[in-house]
Length: 311
Ligand SMILES: [Fe+2]
Ligand SMILES: [Fe+2]
Image (cartoon, rainbow, N blue to C red; front, side):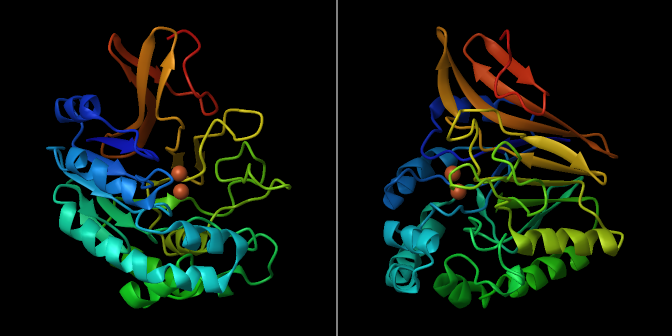
C-alpha cells in the first residue's frame, strides 16, 4: 500500500498536484493541515482543487485553518481575551469548511479505515505551546483554541485530549498510523530537531504533550502505531535556513514531519512540488520525500536533507 503525505500547503497546491496525485499509484492521500495563507478565508479558494482528488483523501485542520488572526495571536501570547474574541468566527468558518469540503474526509479525534491500515487522527488545530516545555504539569495546560474544542469535542485540557486519543487507540484495529497537525513532545529541543522551535529566543522542544502521552500509552499497552505523521514546524528552519530532521525512527515507530516550506519552489529552471511517500509492505513502512517536477521526480531519503544534491 502506498500513501502520500502532503505537508503544510498554505495555498501551495494547484492543478498540477491534482493531475499528479490522481494519476499516481497512491492508495490514499493524507493532508496534515494548514491550507490557509495569512488570511484565514484564503483556504476556501483551495477546497475546489482538493475536491477534485479522486483518491481517498484525509485532512486534519491545522492552526491556520478556520482560525482567525486574533485567535492565533492570542494563542501565541497566551491571551484569553483574544482567544475568546475570535472563537465565533472559527465556528462560522468550520461550518463553511464542512459544507464546502466534499472530497477529502475532515479528520480530528477520528479513526478511518485505509484498507491495509487504519488512520487515527489526533487533535485538530494543534500548534504547540511555548509554556509546555517549562511547566511541571504540561497536561494541565489548555488545548489550543479551547472555546471551539470545548464546544465541538468537549475537550479543554491536554489531559482530556490525551484521554480522547488514547480511547481511539484502544479501539483501533492494528496496524495503524497516527496523523496530527503538530508532532509529539520528546523528539528533541534543537531548532533542527523535528518538532523543536526555531522561532523563539531559545531553542525548545515545542512538541505536543497530549500526543506524546497517547503514544506512550499505545506502547505500554502493546499497540504502538507504525508511524506518527505531522507537519506544522516548517523546514528549512526560519533562522539560518538549516535542514530540519524530517523523519526518524524511535522504538520501532516512524515519525515524519511533512512541512517542507515552501512546498512548491523553483530550483534552477525547474519547479518542484513536495510531498512524502510512505510504502507499507504489510510489516513496516518505508519513507521518502518526493519532489515532483515537469522532467520527473527527485527523491530523498536522507533524514536531514531538504532537497537532492543533484536532482
Ligand atoms: Fe504551517
Ligand atoms: Fe501549523
